[in-house]
Image 1 (cartoon, one colour):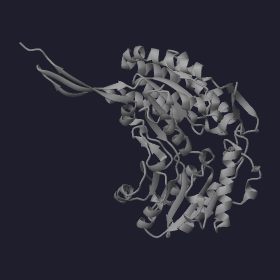
Image 2 (cartoon, helix red, strand yellow):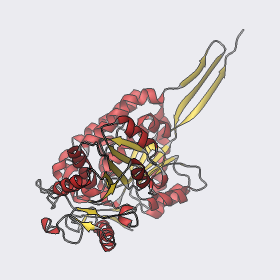
Image 3 (spheres, one colour):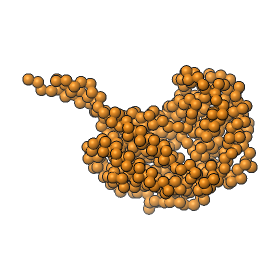
Image 4 (cartoon, rainbow, N blue to C red):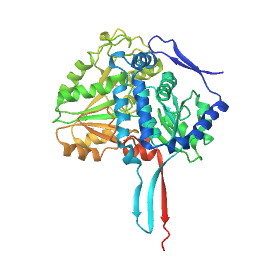
Length: 461
């Protein structure tokens, strides 16, 4: 029997492990979910919504266990308190819009005809969740899927192996039927075999581009609906009229928070030549204040990366850029805790360009490149020079200018004067190799249901 293991970045040792479920037992899990789905969908919407919210509340009661578990599994410092703020905000918001998002679109209701388009749940939804924000990314799909009448099977990345187990425990303890929301431990091959066998009616995957390609290959020919949020290389553009201090504070936080392991983290910044020198100087001072260390220490502000192989990728990109002429501005002596493994010092690079992998490939670590630009057109060209497109962060006092520039950027979300945030009222979506589909908002409910048309001709005398 193969084991799925979480190697803790805190000490490099096995923190948790679970046996990978064989295919025949996994099919039984799917069968139970399918058998439970119709009865769950027949429950009144407000009952389903309230049960989901009760599950969210129950998970909040587990905060003293959840927060240190996250630190051990993926390295986020305990001082940040887990993911409850975003987890609660997203689940609570979709609860408030569920009735409107799922109500039928009535075309005609007369003495002759009743014509409407209803929203019907897909059936069994498979959520494959990532390790970087394992609770918040999962709830983006879990909450609206359950509210809409689907049953859900969740599988988490091995790095955060305990998260799905804990979520399901909380929801079931709050009253959600055990076959309606189930956790499963699978290896990649078994996951692919289930998808290829048309086990699921919708699959939502958050992870790497290669992972997304694997999901698409497994689903080929099955006509299974897919939602894919994949890689990112999100840009920031600081214009000459920007609030400099606010831009530095938000963009540097967006580049380094969670050790840079954010799907919408800032990975490259373009600054107008009039503010460039000041922006770089203030950014170096900002980043130099981090305290790298054990995430279980409440004084630590920057924990280790989730795995030493992730940190190795960041180091390789930085070394390659420096070899090609980039300049590293953060003094490594400020971070003696950098051990060459999972504990990685933050870094800012200048003299960078798009010939470097550091400015084109996903870094997913606490490192960012800053380039000087002369105009909006140059910044737009550079921001679009990427295979990814999740968010872009624009810094200006002119909203019309931001909207005009935003219209020309190939991205899923345009921010002005903020970054690294998910607004649950807006659709979370990407373009190019960042993926397809969208979660949250009214559109998220639409993606987790299908339209069903009713054309009812009434008998008249």
